[in-house]
Amino acid sequence: MKHLFRGLNQQQEDAILPPVEDDLCPALTFPERVVGCLGCMLIGYVLSFGAFFRFTKLLEGDVAPFIVIWTLGNVVSLCGSCFLFGPKSQCDQMFHATRRIAAFVYLASMLTTIILAALFHDSHVGTFLLLGMMIV
Image (cartoon, rainbow, N blue to C red; front, side, top):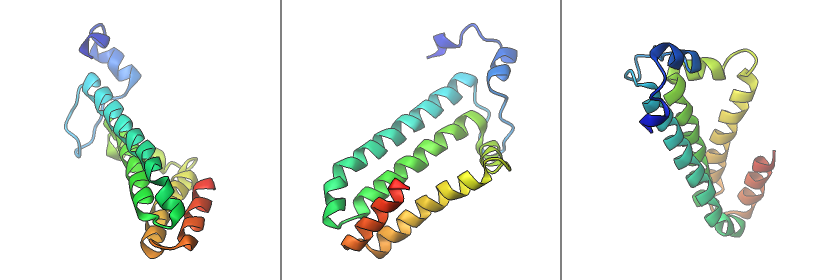
């Protein structure tokens, strides 16, 4: 992977992605940040895709396996962008005035699906509620 970034100096790397000034993450090089981001996003997508192998259980009324894996995949994918920008910067960008409502709706829908999965884990009512939320 390093050969992709061999020709970039620090100024060019900073132009592509600004340096991460965050105490929560150690200073990572540009290639390390890209690899971390791609790795988390790939794992998240695999988890989200893997949730569909539990879709028949969801339709049978057992919602927990599908919802837990699906939500975990979304969280891991979201964490991937923290490698590029840092957690503080990621949160600042997510909750910027122009994105605040979308970020709240996204995070609230993930939390609501987990709560509904816990409340209606063996119910067809929960299945219809959760399918409705996924469509919205």
